[in-house]
Amino acid sequence: MIRRALLLAAIAFGAAGPARADDDACAAIIRAVRSVDSAPTVHSKMIATDPARRRPFESDQIIIGDIAWTTPPEGGTWMKVRISATDRASLSAGLVRYPPTDCAALPPEPLGGLPMQVYTYRQIVPGPGTVESRLWVGEQDKLPHAYEGRAGDVKTRVTMSYTGVVAPIGD
Image (cartoon, rainbow, N blue to C red; front, side, top):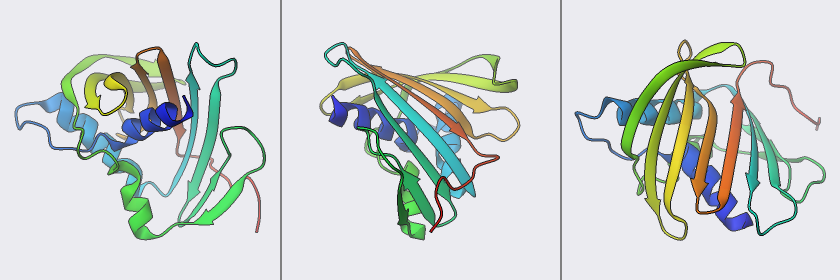
């Protein structure tokens, strides 16, 4: 379950493969996901549920410049690591091999008081197979703010924020 949840989370930020030139929705998804690489700050929170587990899998990640903080999935204290420019660029490149397909733009809807463009898409990945996904992209900043994915019985939700992000712990 933990491995599948991590894979689904990686899919959320790794949908960066090539889209067909005529597929505007897939191209917009790819642009949004890749834009996370250059965001100066990011706070993401993932929650994955599986009926086979009693408790949901939860994880937080904060990135400020070249420093990342993360919480272990089992809970516990924040861990701090330095990340390189290559690490930073790889945030959205994890699944270049699994490009989004069957992309569609849905009607815009608000999320947290901000106008969002909503997209749906599928990815075929080893292990889980077909992942059905939904991505909320800010109409103004063009950054992903929420992701929901489902592969079989496993459901994953990731929320992202880019403003007001502060280090959870010091040096």
